[in-house]
Image (tube, rainbow over all chains, first blue to last red; front, side, top):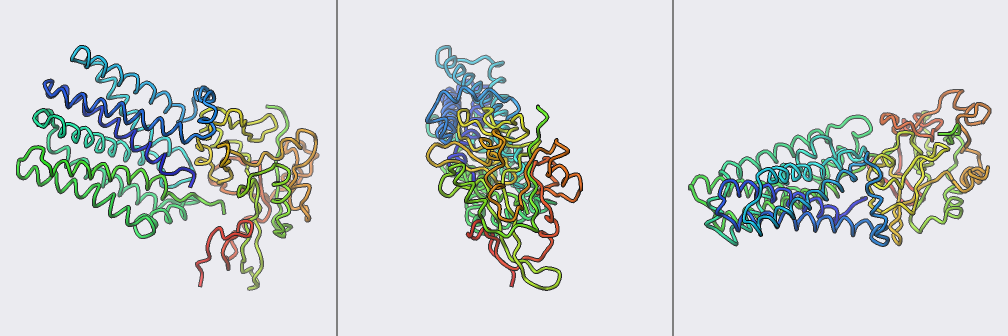
Length: 286
Length: 208
């Protein structure tokens, strides 16, 4: 495999950061008094994306050993990675400015919140497009993979921000929390998109047929099956869904059980990136 | 773009799978241990008459006209050279491995020490001085024919003009500069063994 767990971790962190920042902006609009919740979400957004970017730099060994080479990163605007460099950089600057403004003035301009949300969406989308443009891996499907990554980024980012909010300011989180239906819809939509992606991959035609079938076979019944079913489907999607449904039935707010559900979402989100990077089988040239 | 368009035509009916090309390439280019710019995939096939024989498929960078590796390279390290080949400028490569992920032929490798990506250059240092690539020179059965596809008097141009050459993964329409003779015929024969890459099992045999 070309890439490994470092890149999987980067893709995960970029998604967490994007989703967490978006949650913070929404939380700030819903409940301006829940200051710790908003600040925590924004800080997670900045730190997660920054940490992911550092991992990217670390993984690019030839650049890491000769950092001036990274200046060349803006030389091919046809490369999705170049778009990524621009998107990540602008996101980090905007997130930093938002945090600074919130810290110094106690509020953030609504327009800049929107800019941050749009950039967060760009970060999450680009991580999928980055892989999607490679013709070598049938699993890395355009446009399904970016859609799956955006849904997962939303779920994992919201979960990270909610976890932090729960730990720091439970009352604030109660006020800022999104409607319960969000926690139910996200795993359902993610499951549906993942199912469509696997169906399309398994039934890929032509030169992609063998690799597509082998990828799906490896995930659902091969060496990757324990991680796929156990960590991605059961822990990452089914458990959070069950917890969200139970909380809604009991008309209950954030509880220790909800926190467990959010932790499960994060485990599932990392497993998804790990499997997408490592379980994808390349097409073979004969 | 200049008028030169370097290319290689490999006649599979002539390749005996001796791996001399792989050895000559290693020596010429100092390719690191465990990495290869070219290799031969070998496996047993049952031919039309019911006899088992050996199929050999030499592999190398296809020097695509529409190269995904060049498209995705964020630093411009992978580029199309004047002679139509795809080259890597090691001074620009950051080792992000995006080109390796994008190459549908899986022909690129990353140096474990430097992190810089490498691949077949068509022996750029040799071709720039009027010589053939090392694999072509050393081939014992002249299975590899190399030259300027744009020169109608070159052997490769004549062979290509005569028709019958095929490319790997033609469906992707990347217009590679490496083509084969007898590819479809070889691929159509029933496999009767594992596939080997330089003596190592590359794809296990699942028949019987």
